[in-house]
Image 1: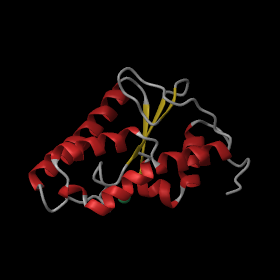
Image 2: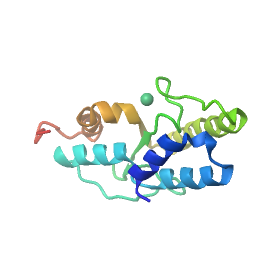
Image 3: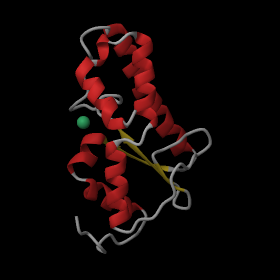
Image 4: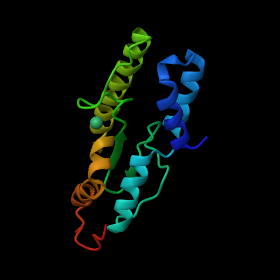
Amino acid sequence: MAHFEILLVLEKVKVDKLSPIARSHLMAKVRNSNTLPELQLRRAMWTIEIRFRLGQRIGRTQPDIVFKRARLAIFIDGCFWHSCPIHGSRPKSNQRFWEKKLTRNVARDRKTTTDLESAEWVVMRFWEHEVDQDAFGCARKIAKLLGKSSTGNLRQ
Ligand SMILES: [Zn+2]
């Protein structure tokens, strides 16, 4: 199932009406697929000539994009799954399940960030909505951290 179809399913069935097993299957798929904001950011980075390899890990952590030489790890956090202050929400049914699940996600994000930082990595986190609203702006921030001029090809 492609990511877009999953999103469509999530929209249609209202995630919390699924059985816990069906739901966790669906969530695992969403987490592991190439998400739309990730693709948007990668495309913007490519356009302003930031080159990178995909699927790089730092130990057991797999950030969305890694620049090993610059020790820069980039994460794109989905607004729902990572509880964005603007768009994060708690489904109304199965409240305990969701509270636990989403709280755990946030705690894990924090731990990942502090672990990487204490290993002297620079961690950049973008919200899904930031990438959605301005992928090129996000790409330029990355370029700046990499010490690259991003004035090259900014054609959108
Ligand atoms: Zn958001």
